[in-house]
Length: 142
Image 1 (tube, rainbow, N blue to C red):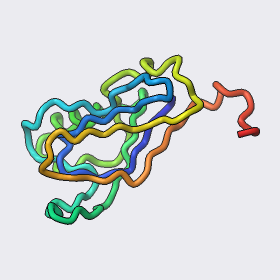
Image 2: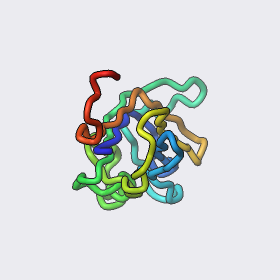
Image 3: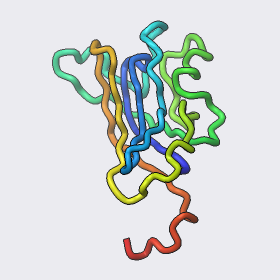
Image 4: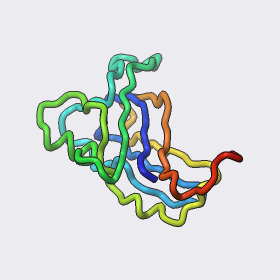
């Protein structure tokens, strides 16, 4: 796995746990819930006043890759006091992609997002995985 990318928005990064789950059940933590203490930091451009009728805001693309120079999302937010929105881009996962070695490639991959504080909402507009093409000799029959 070279990268996992999500186009999303959310009004409070601090309450999210984001995991990638492969078809055979192995998990890598992309964003770890560390508690709700700290300033409000957005992912993308959420509509932060849509409590009664949730509405999608503007999603930014966030990618997790082992070669990223940016810290994991929450560590990035904590290292940059005063930011209100995490910029789109590549970030390190919290867990190692090595935990996915041996996963079955064929089957249902999923992104699991858990919001551990219910005072807000967010949207996933799309997500993708980028695998190293060298691991499969011929993809022409797929």
